[in-house]
Length: 277
Image (tube, rainbow, N blue to C red):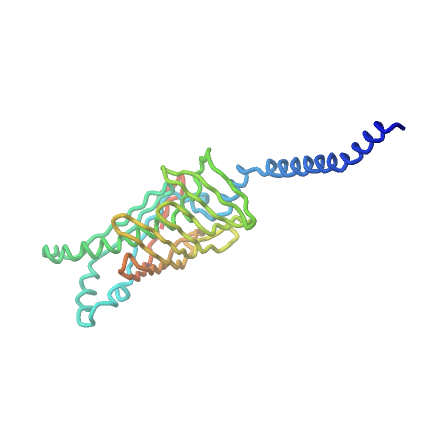
């Protein structure tokens, strides 16, 4: 074998490991690409929806109920001498809620007894508005997990990113960018928007995850920064899981608050039927 052939053979011999390494890299890349493409994000999205015990999926179309604030707790900060008068005034207020499967929420009140003087009526109205604001805020946080949907049913554009601990789902709803963080069991641990975050506490049941509380941070140009912790005690009403008692505690700006709301006298409307007690 002449010198030229020996050199060519030697060069070929040195190239062989590099060629094998390149082939191995291509195989690994192909495997990774195949693994990524094998994940069906639309199925994962549907599995996430199905993992939650939404009343909408169980056929509920509307909720109506009476709501009773815990007045002694609300008036706890008042001087002792003022509490009896405040309690007598508050006892004239009656609250009711309506929430439906489309996410519409309404909290209203009425004043029982004789028509109050103007000053008393204004005081009652201000007191009622504070309770209604707290109740509406709670129901707006509760409904996506328990009544309506957190992930829109028709979601054509979304991004599902896989991480070591789980997934991050990103989509836009009504012009708001939403990021949902969840673990491998599809349990949601955090919701993020430009306005703030919600960290739910969820309990796994035979019907799916049920909301038992949450922590929220929100910044509003009018109200300012609000921090809130909610604890929810649920009850079974005609086989459905609905709020019984809700404790809301936190601060709006520099003002602390603590509100307890109790729900009773439920009237439920199912798809294709009327209201039932």
